[in-house]
Length: 474
Image (cartoon, rainbow, N blue to C red; front, side):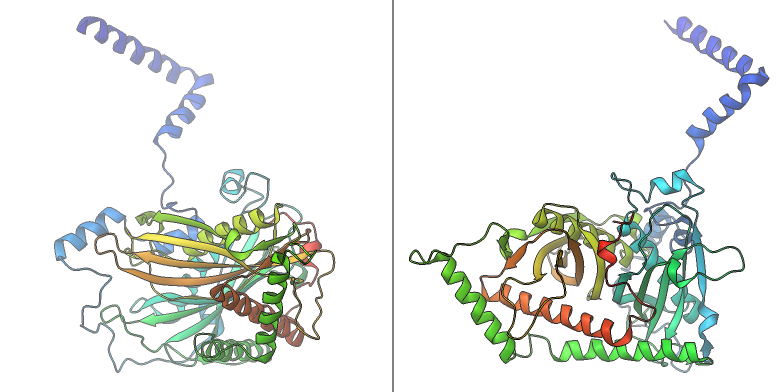
């Protein structure tokens, strides 16, 4: 048997040598060999390789061995400051942090493979990962590597000009708001890649977004100041003012939250009207019955649970990076809206959302998606009318929390608010006090965003009929 195995191996090696000497087949054989030997270096999580290379610089096994050798948990404060208290923070220009990268989707079919879904649309969840990764690159260009920078909030992501064909995309951005405190705002846009030496036109802009990043001392995990900005041009002044408005808006939201204040008179009247409508639906002496297009809020809930793997870590190795959370919450929100409306929804915007606590590698992430508001609503408030005529906008809230596997400790990690549009007439109806509060909170967000868009023109003009347009993003 051993002799037979040796003869077979020798015969196979001889055949391989003859194939390699044959000039007509050597290229094919060489390609066959490479296909088995090559590995996608640094492409660990679906983020574009150029951005991943700057975010993940050390293999996980090396980071893990270093942690085990030192016997310390890098995710916990050490109590030893690593950033000097008297370090000099020279003002910087916005252009100092500018960074751009081109996704050659039209040129590279294999790259396009990672961005396309089953229906031939571009996966917005994957692009959201790229946006957060890019914001990290920009933040570190502004702060340097001495600090730890984390995503604190995503103020808004909107679709401006939907794509109608596959093309190369340029992702670009810079720090547009920093006063010298610990936080900074980063403005990013996704546009059709312009010709070399040219700038993207407004009509070619697909997405505009703003991220708030916060710098921490790597040792104490406490906030540290960053370089302030120098404002030089009128355009930069407008961008800086927008950052100020966003900052005030976040502070106002925290002050007027329903955890601190009861619903106002108009909202209380609306709750009462919805409650009366619910009673009418269940009154045996009333012919009015719940329509088939009206669904109770608790029936719209979708949930997931997943263990966090190191392939989705940030540059500090032991925490999950924010872009992965955005991708996961977006795709769950999409499924929630589709399940509710029984049709494929069109993404309109990610409304102001906050990251509350970090997600450690190895922990379990729980996500809960709920349809919290529909426009037009089932019962409009007194004196209000909806701009939506033939379509319905669906507000989906995704709550995320993380559980430590070893200790069972559960912490909230963020709340994300997505708006979709569908060509169906569907309504959501709350029926518990907690659901009424979610409904009122979502309604407030819809009204606030609408007022902001109308007053500012959305800084470049997000198209109000974006959901009616044909597009290849989803």
